[in-house]
Length: 265
Ligand SMILES: Cc1cc2nc3c(=O)[nH]c(=O)nc-3n(C[C@H](O)[C@H](O)[C@H](O)COP(=O)(O)O)c2cc1C
Image 1 (cartoon, rainbow, N blue to C red):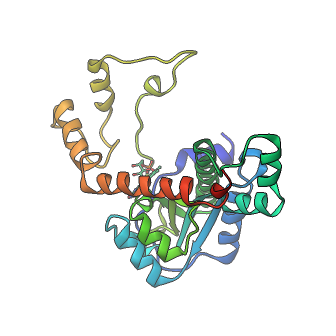
Image 2: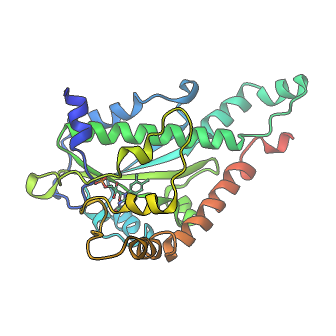
Image 3: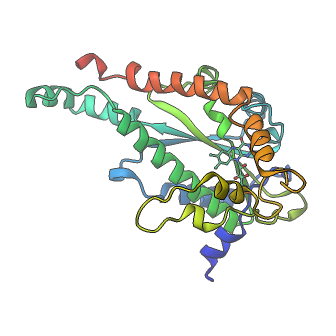
């Protein structure tokens, strides 16, 4: 195996950090790798907020579903799905007038544009994760950055067409050791040949019965259906998931409706 594949195979999320800051060369290399990620139309439809400030990191530890380890990581990167620069460029270049002349008034970014922004931001984030791993820097995604949209918008002074889609916390792992990789579902459930394959419920229950160590709680000692019920209560059925749904709706509404360019319909 080459080094790139080794880094991907060895990676696992790190939630316990050495407090020392990242070496500047490491931080720079991680950010440079993020910027080299593929991007739709080479438009770079994302912005990376680099957060060192301790007060902000402590605030994020609270607003992102009360996860104290967020404040312990020396570096936080917030990945914004961001169409703002292109809206402003289009306006500066006279695109609204052009589009009107052509008979298809520019109405601001579409849902498709929003999804492209999210794709761009997440692909850049994953480049950062792999670059970090190759340098001995641990990382963990924080999906809860999608919650508390209004608070984060105020905290980061976000324009309406910039939505925080992912956050990474990074640092050297405490004790200098990366955790062991965690097990995944059997590949047959995830990689389907040629056409989609639906699995009957019994086979899906087998899917979660994979070996111990695949989730935060081992399944051993619990029947698969009971395990799935408990999992639901911890995740999709939990309060944070309701907040995420509300917040994402609010962010999407701002992105689609509040943005500049809409007045030109
Ligand atoms: C989109 C996304 C959001 C995540 N959000 C969180 C989070 O808020 N808190 C956390 O501790 N881990 C979070 N994680 C990390 C996952 O829990 C972790 O990737 C998963 O359990 C598999 O473990 P591994 O990364 O060590 O292989 C997130 C991962 C992804 C990809």
